[in-house]
Length: 149
Image (cartoon, rainbow, N blue to C red; front, side, top):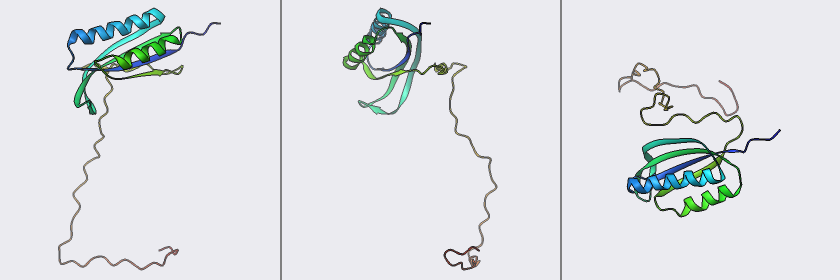
């Protein structure tokens, strides 16, 4: 029984200040390279997002996820080299997915299936009562080190 080729995730952060035509060409060239030596499985445009920290003094980028099967190991080296020297790509990462990895969530802006993390707000507790300023502090029993109270 023949195994299917491994699946890879390629996440690219494109410089949003670069012209739209240049960003479209970067994506088209990447898709062509994948199609020549593999199979493009998924192509998601996650849109513009703020960065967690500035990269090259830029605060936002255009995110893209490409999932693909690599039929030859040369494809990974070719993509790595090409994406590293291409102007307009701020960051990229190629990750081999383990079998059984769940599908990537729909991260497009405004997508109903987008998974966003919200910090849980603890239930509001009543404000702690502060004793008046002239109240003496509580006296705690003295306990020697190693003893229990």
